[in-house]
Structure formats: C-alpha cells, structure tokens
Length: 79
Image (cartoon, rainbow, N blue to C red; front, side):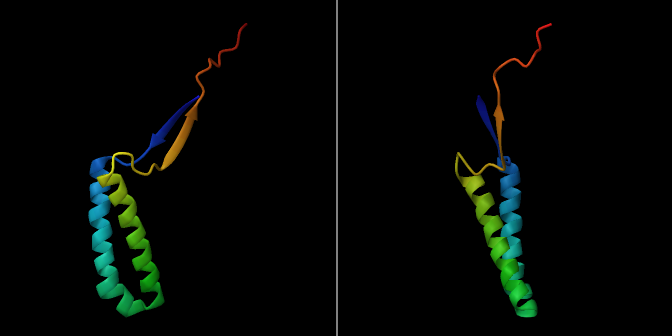
C-alpha cells in the first residue's frame, strides 16, 4: 500500500500566507472594533489560516490537505 499526501504548492502557500496576514490586519483594525465577538472569531480563524499556510511555506514537510492510500495490487479480474 502506498500513501500519497496532497498539500498546497509553495506559491499557493505564499498567497495564502499573505492573504492571511491581510485578514488578520483587517480583523484587528476593523472587524473586532465593529462587530465585537464576531470580530474575535474572525481574527482567530485568520490567525489559524495564516499559521497553516506559514507551516506549508516555511517547512519541507508541511501539513497535507488529503491523505490517499493506493493499493499496489492489480484489480484485474481473471476470466
């Protein structure tokens, strides 16, 4: 059995990291002061998204989105 992990590319991780930082800034300076509890939830989610993409960007292994197991056996039926 072979295991395959699928994770974002370095470029997509960079884009996600930059957008996450922007969302954190928007959360701190606009959403928290305007919407109180929703703003805090917004900020926490933005921080988690930023951390996820930062790990994928700055480490070799990263965090995969999906894990796929592939059987090495032939699935052909013998007639």
